[in-house]
Length: 197
Image 1: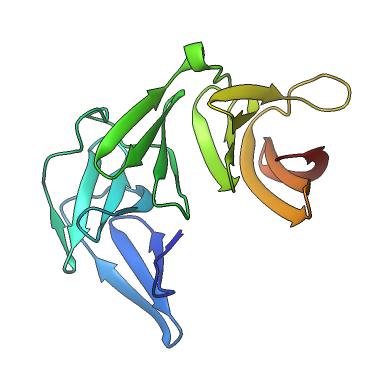
Image 2: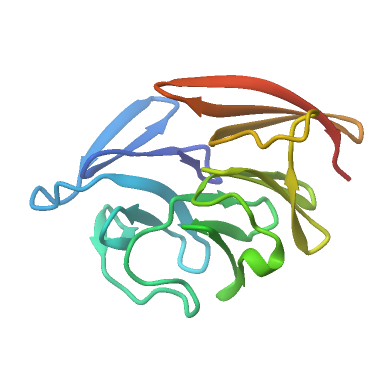
């Protein structure tokens, strides 16, 4: 789900997108011949439109109520769509492709990989606040801070496993991180207390 600057929420679906505002939700079917799931929705801050992430198709622009094939920003992978995104308040959009993270910043793309410390497997969720970013994936949780990624583990030193949700509550400079991780067909939420500056 992505909430734009006007407060409208955009929800991905199976060959459709939902637009929700204060008056309710409106369903928008896209292409009946594409029986494809939209995995993610995030803004194209250059054009003011949206990017939709289709599974095997990749990124497709959504503007003026219709799909539009146009060139991706140089440096983003082609083919399969990203698995997660986080539109940061500073205008950057963080995008997770497989086990890499890309930052789209005013048309420029910066890529991060294992050599930068990412160690979560396929990226499933990203959330941030201020100067840091949490990245959850199939193999655990990382924190991006001061230009690189660091693995975050539980008090006993073990990985969190598959991280599928992140909620950060702030109080001063202290953070309480609520993490959802998959255990079979159940999502379990746990609390991690730490400091993020």
